[in-house]
Image (cartoon, rainbow, N blue to C red; front, top):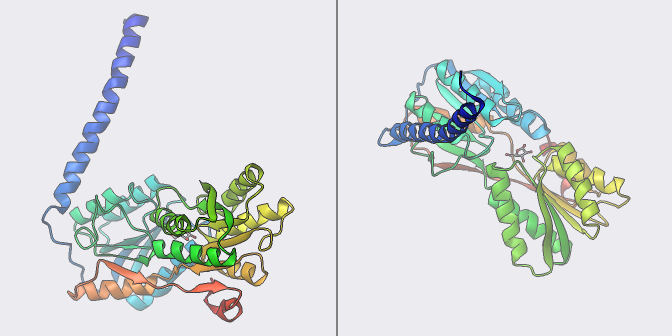
Length: 339
Ligand code: AHR
């Protein structure tokens, strides 16, 4: 039997070996994955009906996600798709394993919004290696690992950087170029959060009267946004503006601002992104200043792209979605676009 000292030496050695083993495994996966995309052409897509399509959702905790899922349910019959759906409940690893089990089921096509850019990139290569074409919708993956047009058919989605620019442009005008801003970021590591931050911060940096006094993730969720805003309001009582990366966090921030005895839309200007029904109602009520729409209706677009791809048409690497903009000037007549 090993002595206590020998045991602790063995444990220490095991702990040194573990990171080494993990790095070797990561390297092996990397090499395998690289082999998947070296010179291989993109997998072909059958024109048969029905087509078995896997749709792996990230979570279902807000109206935007629900509208996105519904747009796939609604298009399925029209497009001749038999859709297999999963919900990762906000977990990258669950989304990866959901997709892996769709690969094991040999779906004909995979469509999904990658929750985060990096953790979801390798599974795109695994699908390619298994001969299953992939369309990414809403969010993109890390292009240094998996590339649109080489490893997957295309990315269908909005220009998130431009959304950030548009939100900042509105805020500069609404505040006369003078504001102390709290930024509520989306899910850390998600392309939507990275790019919305980049676009907004770029414009703010060019306006010397505008300062971002705090920037923290609210994970694109209403309640997290409310809690983060509560804490930040205490630390920064001089805040005059909020930029939330989505409507849900803006609605959470509005609740926190009211609870702190301030008036959203008067004491604090708020701008956000999404264009949900809840966001549009808040604009109509004068509590939210503006929302840049981010369309969640990818079902029909994905159907069209898949059908054209199956016929051999060349698909651009980015199918860009154009988004509306709502503020008090047009929100009433735009209500039909809310979801
Ligand atoms: O990726 C799009 C974002 O994700 C939407 O703005 C948000 O509401 C969702 O959770």
